[in-house]
Image 1 (cartoon, helix red, strand yellow):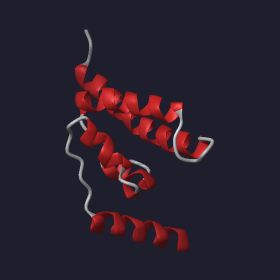
Image 2 (cartoon, helix red, strand yellow):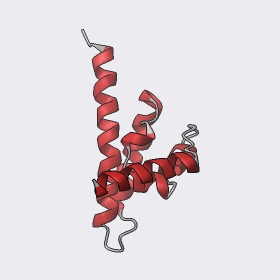
Image 3 (cartoon, rainbow, N blue to C red):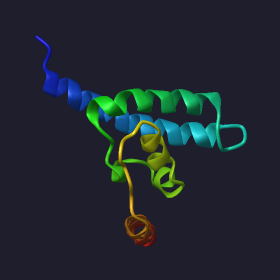
Image 4 (cartoon, one colour):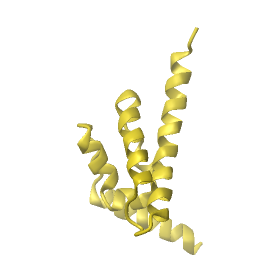
Length: 101
């Protein structure tokens, strides 16, 4: 018998990894912006997100939230994933404080 709770847990973890894979693909792109690999990762994110829901934005590389790519990918599949500017600013400040510590 398939353990559906475990399956959802694994799918959510995979989705979080896909967001990190997207950041790595962007960094590896020839122009540093986009590539076929980026597109392939986005398609996997778009397939999995409706099944398990959006990955919480704090589990996504901050650059993808700052550039609104996280929000745009969700909007493209009709899923609300808005992040307020003040939330991003708070997260940036926290990361800066951690780097300085």
